[in-house]
Image (cartoon, rainbow, N blue to C red; front, side, top):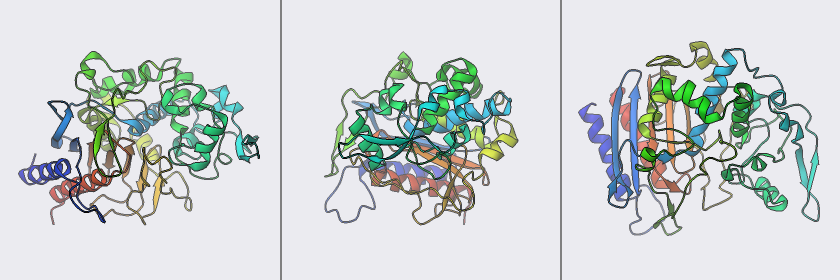
Length: 404
């Protein structure tokens, strides 16, 4: 760990915990982050590992703190899908209903009748597993889409956070393949993995990803050792104050292990996953993916004209309006956001990245050979203090590896 990077990154983490920077239109002090961990790596070694604040009462945040990682789960599920595809056990472009027949029951939402009931029609074409990984199948999230929030409310369907099969049986917002909409697509991709392997998704991940990479603190179910290092979840109010979300926990032993959001993990474990992608699929105990699979997955899969959009915060207690690098064109791979242009932090064009609802963020820059992870446990998503300090941390990493 270089002294310059350590000093700069430590300062970012301390500032993030002490107060929230770069907040405009706010007078006085606002509380910062309750606790944060950040790590960075190149292809061979950890470049930085640090933590600040508290994970619990009288317990400091540490690099092995366990967190609900929400949608950073998606890249792990996609990795399991890609493994099956490269083995010839799964055709990404075949109808996904060939593996999960329940997908044949899904229809497209055309609107709402006067009584609030849903107006539905059959989709114009089948959903493929590639569409699920690209978020072009048509599924949404009620957190980010007002129509989706209404259809869940009108039809009394449960949220995907319940971990139930019923929560997956929601209509599409458009015909498969015709647009991009962030949603529960990867939960369905996890069901494809289960159908192909005949195993629960968590068991597949343990055998094929976690064990080969040494990720021994990652899973859908909290072990006693993981629970002992678990960070508390927090909620930021409109006035900036923080409160503990008492008793928060993702469903343990759920009906469906949700490939879109259900994992618990640590920054140390996730950095091992990031490093595997930096190394063209190679892990410390052998390959997890083939180099050609990684190259394919890291390529824009949306075509030349379709781009991803900002995420509107429909449920404001869970998310602000969110967009990474506003104004910059961004694509999607299998299954990551791809920035089409170089980012102001130093991130190379064509890098991979995404985030988790409780303000967790990661990036994988295969061109520069560097990546990192930033973890907090705080709602709503895109918290200004979290985002500003995360980007400052990323900038500090690039200032170290690409000194001006």
